[in-house]
Amino acid sequence: MKTLKVLFLSLCTCCLLTTYAQDKKTNPKESTATFLVEFDCKGCAAKVEKNIPFEKGVADLKVDFDKQTVWIKYRNDKTDTTTLKKAFAKIKIPVKRIQ
Image (tube, rainbow, N blue to C red; front, side):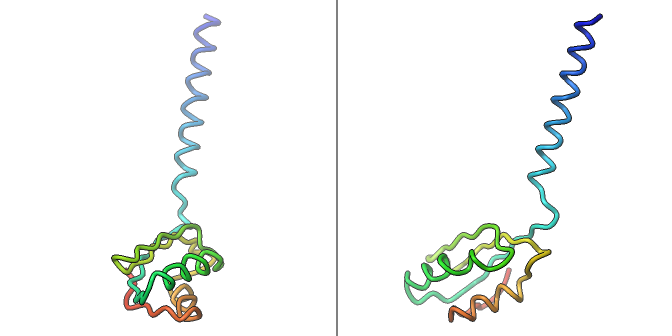
């Protein structure tokens, strides 16, 4: 009987830890946006990679020079797409559209 109780408690602990870990992966405060931009050269892409991650609320960033896109994961309690578009304007990278 004692072994059964220990086994049951171990199983419950594993289930709780798994549920907690899954909840940490999906953060309702995070959003993503893809910006269609106009890169003239690889230096412009490097400028984005160097500056935009330091904007408040930016959690992750991926630049694709060939597709002329910038994917950003951000905290929507700290920033929004309008503010991020202004950040592109500060470094003189034109944003055509936001997806």
